[in-house]
Length: 113
Length: 113
Image 1 (tube, helix red, strand yellow):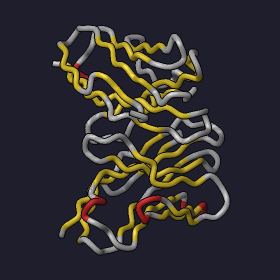
Image 2: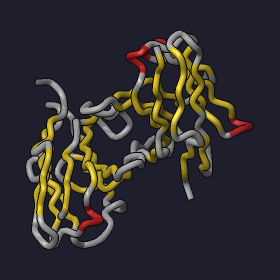
Image 3: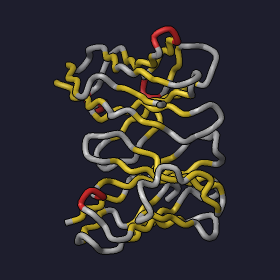
């Protein structure tokens, strides 16, 4: 497919466990964004990559959250010691550049029990 | 602090009726403004955007929005709603030249036949 893909679509984990969420951006897009959407809220910015580097990680809520994009394409959002408050839909978006339209994936629904 | 407000959490209209969804922003300067639609199981889709120039912006699916600087508003309109327009609508803003989006909480639109 030509769109942004995210895996898994759903993830259920126990409190305290470690999870990884994956995002495959549109081919050729250099910019990649992670957002978190809690129930009844709009998406909230987490982190933005330009190429391999994190250009802005000001939205990461604490040091349990970390994201990488080692080859400038696929990105992984990592959450350590998950808490029930981390339950949300995690959205990924990509764009050609930082001033271009963002295309969103369908999201990963994370549930922490 | 920068913020986007959507005063209406839930709106119900009859099919064929006109629609207006409200959005207000609070920014230091005129931001870039966007409207996105999110259908169940789908990623966010961009309906339209305002960067500068003509304050009435046309988008996809028959939607338009009007930027009013004096009211710090960017309301979304459609003259005749179709049942397929039922979805959640998000207004978003970003700082000029930068694509880190700040979203409102969303307005859920229901359409009665």
